Image 1 (cartoon, one colour):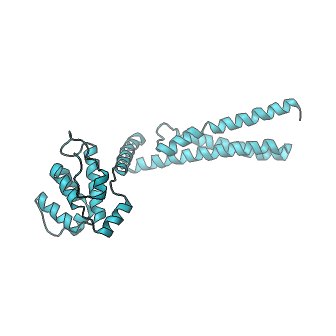
Image 2 (cartoon, rainbow, N blue to C red):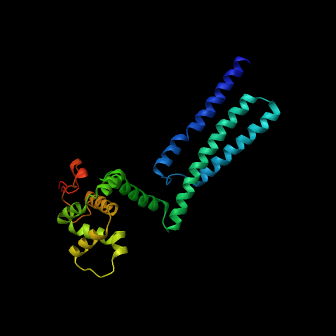
Amino acid sequence: MSVAMIFLQIFMWGGSILTTASFIPTLKETIKTKNTTSTSTLSYIMFVIEYLFWCAYAVALFFVSHDIIEVVGLIISDGLGAIISFIVLMFKLRNLSKAKHLHMSEVDWYRQYSKQKQAQDKLKKLQIFSEKDLQLMKKEQTDLTNVINSLYTVYGPVVDLRIQESRSYKKAINREITSPKQRLEFFLNVANNAELARIISLIYLDVYEGNAAKTNDELPKATEQQKINPSVKPTV
C-alpha cells in the first residue's frame, strides 16, 4: 500500500469516527434528560436515511472493489450513526406522542415532566425509612404513630390532606368523619407501617417544597436516632 493510500485510509477512518462520535453527546443528553424539544424530527429522519444509504453504498462497493477494510469501516461508522440517530428519533416521537395525548405542546409537556421528575427525586432523597427499616419495624412491631402525631402538631393541615388522600383511609372509611383529629385517629388505626412511612415521606416533601401550612419553617430533619426509634420527634 502506497503512502498516499495510507493517508487516504487515515482520513476516511478519522472522518467516519468523528462524524459518528459527534452524535454521542446528543444521545447521552437525550437519554439522561428525555428532553427533545430542540431536536428536529425531520432532521433525524433524514440522518437515519442518510446513514442507511451509506451502508448500502458500502455493501455495493464491496462487490466492485473488494476492499474489505474500506467497506467494514463504512459499515461500522454509518451503522452506528444510523442506530444513534434512530434512538434519538424514537425519543422525539415518543415525547410528541405523549404531548399529543395530553393535548399539549412538547415544550409544555416536558416542563410538566421535569417538575414531576424533580418531585420524585426529592421524595427519594427524603425517604427516611428503607425497605429494610420497614421489615425490621414490622418484625419488632414498632409503632410509627408517634411520628405522625408529632408532625400533626406542627403541620396539621398538610397531614390531614395526606391522610385523606391515602389508600388505607379511602379503602377503610365507611362512615363520614368531619373532624381532622378524628380522621387522624381513624387513619392510625387502619394504616400499616408501610403506609405510615409513605405518608411521613410525603409530608416531608410538602414541607420541603413549601406546600405545608408553615411555609417559613425549615424541613423537619430525620435523624439517625429517629430512624432507630420513631417515637423521637423530628427536629423542627
